[in-house]
Length: 293
Image 1 (spheres, one colour):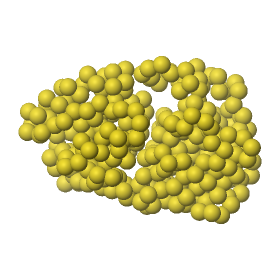
Image 2 (image 1 turned 90 degrees about the horizontal axis):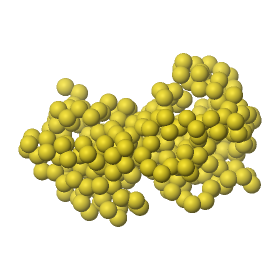
Image 3 (image 1 turned 45 degrees about the horizontal axis):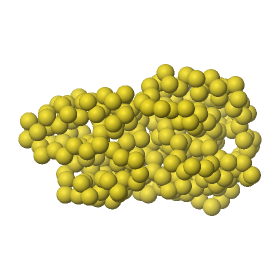
Image 4 (image 1 turned 180 degrees about the horizontal axis):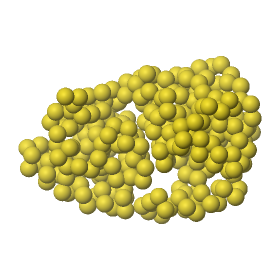
């Protein structure tokens, strides 16, 4: 069982002690481990080897980091959500409920799902380029500790005033994807997205494909209009929205850096990339889901 020390303002760390005791009382042998910065193979692969399951206490950032090790070692994982949006937990119907966790560990089924990679970093739910990526970078630049949904208020306000869409050149599986104008791009590995907007509702988590959804606009006003359409589930009734599927996606900003975010996190790279390369690895991450009985 791993926990993110700062998830939920430290709530994940505090709760991990009680969860460990509950699991031990239920007959499980548990090793509790705090997440660490850096690649998960440096701190998680070895402790995970030989275990039957991995419980991740944290948000989507902790989950996507753990997914790399779960896939390499072949140990199914599940999530006790302590993050801000918890897209992974929402997608797989996971909660903080202790009895439900024990039931899942005792009688759950294993499903293998796809793993997305963007410039070598993992994502499970989505990656995007545009207004939301600018907000994530803005927040990360000012972040000093744990965050909540209220932490996004100032970054969103700043980006509403300043964000302008940049032209993008996109290739799907090596073929040019002709975009009509500037806008923002969401690439879904699942259909989940923040605030239940779900711009890629057709995405399937184990089909070996990424769903590229492009929404043309010039400023935050256009973003807000598309957000309303997404919330209503009507984004693809508009003829200007574009959708494509591919195993690999390349985004080129020309002479401009391309800011992107994956599962609510900015990349670890210290500099902005001009070329963003996304790919998918089919059914490499084992997930412990509830039994269908």
